[in-house]
Length: 267
Image (cartoon, rainbow, N blue to C red; front, side):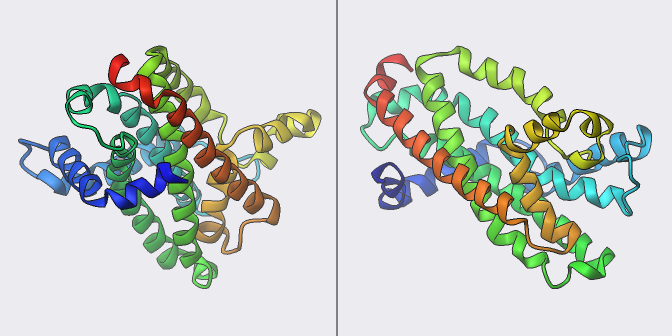
């Protein structure tokens, strides 16, 4: 698909925008780019403190090393949420550049996703190291989280391109996304396992809805499986993740193409 191959063709521009966004994000700060390491680690510590220590959240059936269970589910969600929020306004914030120069505009939101990949990689590295140190059973599978993370990046890239394209012509999209992210977080099995929810036993359709109706469920479960459970994601989760990644990429390309001619005028 040319929408994505154009990013490779214009890789120098893509790299320039990526470096600009990364520098602008921490411009004037004392630590500078070191914040790309500090912020994800701080965010993970905050979630750990609130949900595992203060709130003492715990699945119905006790999970050994629950703190690590939590940390192995957070990286894909944080990457997904921050990418959608940062890319939503990217075309609008770069309106002056878009009006002046003709170039593949999809590189703008995709470069924003690329800046979030840095933090995602840091969080993945932390979860991977902790898994190797704490859980002996994961040492043969933990490296599988890396190709799974690559698939997740593709999924988030397609979703972010669709959101940013829609928001360029319909400004309500960014507010809808922001409003949905909080309830979406609690409907995603990051703090719990779906099988441990008390209501699932009496209403199994709710469990099926959370598992198959939420596109982030297979993302989190596939990512967590090799890191925490020491196993491959189930076949159903793997197929779901691959299919939704293809759908996200196709949808992102189609939405972008449908509004591309209007972006300069609407931005």
